[in-house]
Length: 170
Image (cartoon, rainbow, N blue to C red; front, side, top):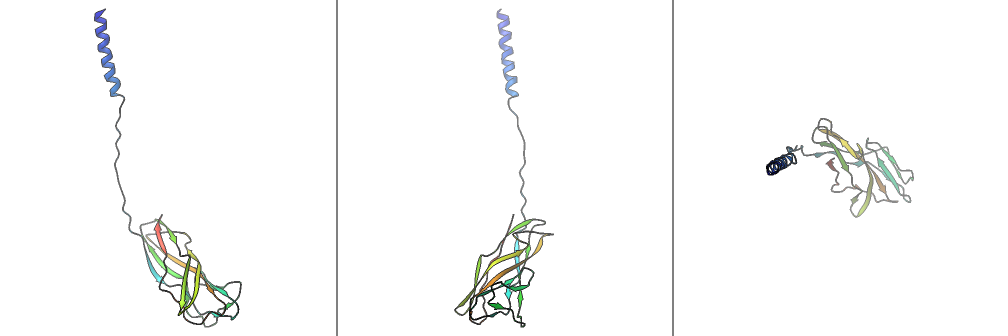
């Protein structure tokens, strides 16, 4: 019986080592990263509403579409004279990595002024709207907005220093 015990103990030790060798596995992985071309935005044209005539007692709006067409808001108060002046949507070129998409952030409100007189520009829109897609690494971005003209707005050329459009990769 002693011989059987010695064999059994040896068998148990061998089986124990065999079980341990099957209780562990090793997996392998590698790491990588792709550095994208930095996204950029280049100014092409400013937002311009052109010549606007205001009525003495009524406020109004001028809407500049992203296509560069202007119209008056439904409330009246302003007219667009036949001597139009320069008007156009703002234009930018967005450059970046291949066929990537990007988010567009527009300002909420911009104030333009002439001396101590102010007007507000708001309701900014873009084409493309919200998100753009770079085709071969570039895309045109057009910006329209609404000009809010007060009743009896003082004559003058209204401008501001600048306003920001932000683009970020998605």
